[in-house]
Length: 111
Length: 208
Image (cartoon, rainbow over all chains, first blue to last red; front, side, top):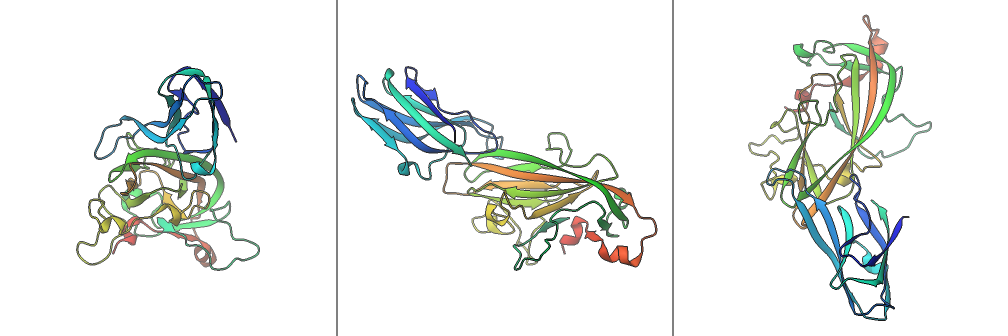
């Protein structure tokens, strides 16, 4: 099962590359804000391009899949809470205020 | 030319091969058109096979659809043979999702319809979008149960993939397994060979 860790110096940060023939299913999300200098207001974003359809041209879309606020000095992990969450494209994490001391890790598999 | 093989009710030992194999016979009915005279009404033995997997995916908004053409037409998916001695047995399976698939061959002509006037698949109808539609669970990606048979220059088989309401966007992943079969014609088939042969119907035989 692959995983990736990013720090929130830049926002948004890519957590995994899109896989054309599969969805990405997160199995673990850990936010370490123990050394952070403020609350981390995070959103998990799904970035994908729709196909040309009967009704619409191909378009780049960003959909928010999860929003979480992790307090300064806190460390949070989510596992069961991620059940049924899936990404059609590339999962990204965005933070309200970039902070290199805030670390986000995500483990995932493909479906 | 398009079959849905249901779940077996019993298993047999030794198992029965799911795909056409070397040495198997196939027979094309007399209803194949004269334009496909290479196969019309003929019996062949399969000399060799080769299995080629391929995946097709689309991301589609809800209540919208995308037509996927499996033929070799311009802009299509190129899943048809180019050699007159080749038969493609294509297994079609779907990854889970909130979508339906309607089959058309050629474009605009439904493969699955009922006899009453108007009982035809229609993705713009709240009820008839489910008529004749295959769902992902009907032919799972890892246990493909929809079989289609194509030869060079057969009319295009279209998969209309429709994302049902209840989800903003859906990723449709269609898994194909193309069983390439190289054919050798049996010029004077015996009754036994005719009996053993898998009959491959022309698509018009599925509509009456």
